Amino acid sequence: MANVLPYRPKAGEIPTDPGVYRFRDADGRVLYVGKAKNLRARLSNYFAPLHTLHERTRRMVTTAASVEWTVVATDVDSLQLEYMWIKEFDPPFNVRYRDDKSYPFMAITLGDEAPRVIVTRNRRIPGAKYFGPYPKVWAVHETIDLMIKVFPIRTCSDSSYKKAMASGRPCFPGQIGRCGGPCSMKVTIEEHRAIVDDFVAFMAGGDQRFARELTTRMRESAAAMDYESAAVYRDRLQAIDAVLNKSALVLEDDMDADLFGIAEDELAAAVQHFVVRGGRIRGVRASTIEKEIDIAGADLVDQVLQRAYGDAAAGDIPRHVFVPTLPDDSGELEQWLQNRRGRRVTIQVPQRGRKADLMKTASINAQQALMLHKTRRTSDYVARSQALTDLQEALGLDEAPLRIECYDVSHLSGTNVVASLVVFEDGLPRKDQYRIFGVNETTDDTDSMYQVLTRRLAHLDHPDEDDEPVPDATADGEVVTARKRPRFAYRPQLLVVDGGKPQVEAAARALADAGHSEIALCGIAKRLEEIWLPGEEYPVILPRTSESLYLLQRLRDEAHRFAIVHQRKRRKRDISSVLTEVPGLGAARIKALLRHFGSVTALKQATPEQIQELPGIGPRLAEAIHRHLAAG
Image (cartoon, rainbow, N blue to C red; front, side, top):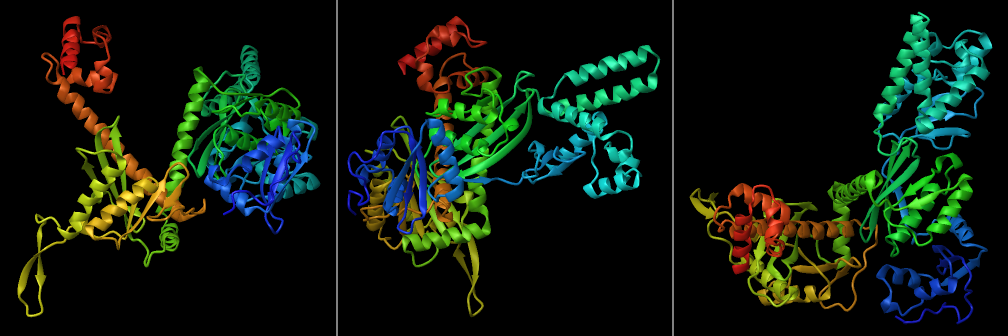
């Protein structure tokens, strides 16, 4: 492979102005769209020596056959043009967004003569005002039922409305008190429009003025002994309270904001978009992002915000936008959003208080969504079958690897070296087959991997002899007692190691020394998600949407998780064994020390005064603990 791309522009050809660039393949298809404050500086990164590029970036630039750019006047213009081109060309190397599901919204059809409130998943109704999204359809209906008690607006269909207005007879929902539009013959079109405006104003910000006005009217009616009107206002006030109480007050009651929690790995990201209006969470939208080119952190936030607000109406853009990481061009993004909204918009990273707590909640939800996204792909039967078939083809196997074993070496600051083994059969975890290997003496991770695999492969030739015997019927009717072959002695079709070329070569030596070179082997390197095969100079790159890559990721992550769980248990046992030797230190106090310091190392570094801060530990006992640990 040549180290210089043939279509690389000559020195000085690329301008230093802000602009947007496009990579195209030989057929003219746009592969990637990006923006830059300085086109020459940005594009020079793509034309660096190929071996220095991120693997997925290298794949993009070698697939491309040309690059072109468009200079714009300002950085804000480049934002707008980049978004337009991504929407128009749908480049395969730009990040891909997938909504986790189609969410229901509450919509008020403001473009109609007599607007009505409906539940819909269609976000393209002309002139409609949307609220949500809501997690479930019934949640929207429940909110509407409460709202129309306070703001009786139209709920009937367009056909019912036209029929009622033409005949002069109320529509059926109006006859049973379920529709408050002009078709109910109770209000005029102008009066109804005023009620609709109040409905929208309340939903947009949970305006407390409505509650205050109803309270005042209720008291005035009660003072005038108009108890029937007072009861109506009371019921409306209770309906308002019910709507407000259904949405938790998480920020100041005048705060309108959007908050984005993001969790990502090398190939995918999950986004949790919290819509906060009037200080209350009015909706949550979840989506997943599939990465093709190397993008993370601030660049990913940039893309998320462009997608969230690229087609948004001015009224849907809030005053504040909270993100986990500030984009490099946050100033330009703020200006872009301000131009769309018509008023000032700020982009901030919450540092403390309730905003930081809400960001933490959104991030936790994003982490869970990302884990669920990956788990669903590997647990689905069709996806599992496709993953095993893809692995067979990518690794050149004679058969699909129905039993796969994955190994990960773990240690605590270079000590307590252990290796985890997890087993997947038919694409699903077999947790009863998981194993932990202790490594007493080792030089490095590759030596540990060699030792562990040598011990594991010995079981293929020398199964354990303490398994339960099972009867075996022979042809002549004689019953012979035979030992059941243990599951751990089953031969895997594929071994996966967590690591790159060095770990794979160490595992290959173990297979060769054990005489089991017929077992397939590969390694998955976390930094670039490359698949390494023994004896190969370059890795195998699986497509980002490949089910086989998700399966290998799940294997690697499960092996890492299992090793960490074991390390934590071992660390707790080590701490307990050390502390039980201290006179006067019982189980409850040991538990308190464990919870507070977490490790022997941290406890050894603590002074007697710091140890004494724990309830139930006096100066003498704290000194004894410190002296005992120092002597050990």
